[in-house]
Image 1 (cartoon, helix red, strand yellow):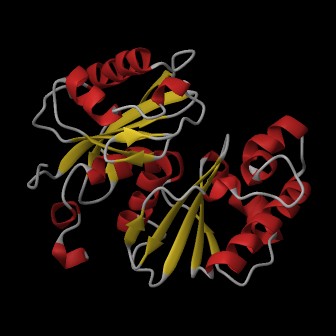
Image 2: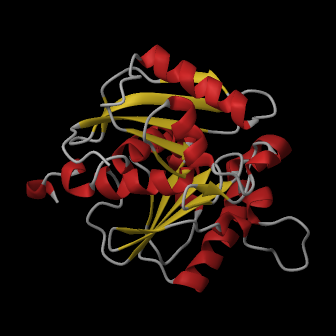
Length: 263
C-alpha cells in the first residue's frame, strides 16, 4: 500500500450508480469533478468492472501510481464479498478485490460502502475526535451502518438488518429512506419509524454519537429535530461524497492521510 501519497482516487459502487473522484487526502475534499455512471442492469461482476473502467478513464486516473480505493455494497472480509445488496447474487462468496485488481491491472483497497463512509467522517467529518462509540447510519435504499470506537472502525456491522418483533420485514425495509418514497410518508410519519430504530440502537449499544448520512442528510433539519434521543444525532459532513472520500483515504496508510499536526 502506498504511504507517501497526498491524493488518491475513490470509487463508490452502489446499486443504482457508480461514482468516483480524485481526493485530497490532507483535506478530505474532492480535487476533481465527481464522475457518475449508472450501475449496469443486473450488476454482474464483469459489467460492474467495465463501468468502473469508464469512471477511471473519464477521470484520467488510470495511472497505477495514484492509489485507488473501491467501496462496495456488501459485507467485505479479506477482499471477499459475503453478501449482495442491490447487486447480483454472483457477488456472494466472490474474490472481489482480486477480481478488480486483475481486471484493472493494479493494486486497490476494497471495503464495504458504509464502512468507508464512516472512515470519511472519522478522519474528516462529524466523527473526528469523538471519544467512545460513534455510529454512522446511511439512510437510502437500505440502511448502512459503520461503528467507530475512539476513531477505530469496527468493520461489517449490518445494523440495518435488525429484526422487528413479530414482523417479516427488517429495520431497513421499514425505516430506510426508500420507505418514504415507496409509501409517500411525511417527515413526521417517517420520524416515528426512525425513532423506533435509533432508540433500539441506543438500548443495544449505548453510543456516544449518531451520524446520519446518505443523500437525505441534506434535509436533516426536516426530520432530526423530530427525534427524541439521549444520544446526540447529527448529519454527516460529507453526505453522498463520503464513500468516495473514505475509499480514497483507505487506500493510503493513516499516517499519511492525516498529518500528525492535525491528528
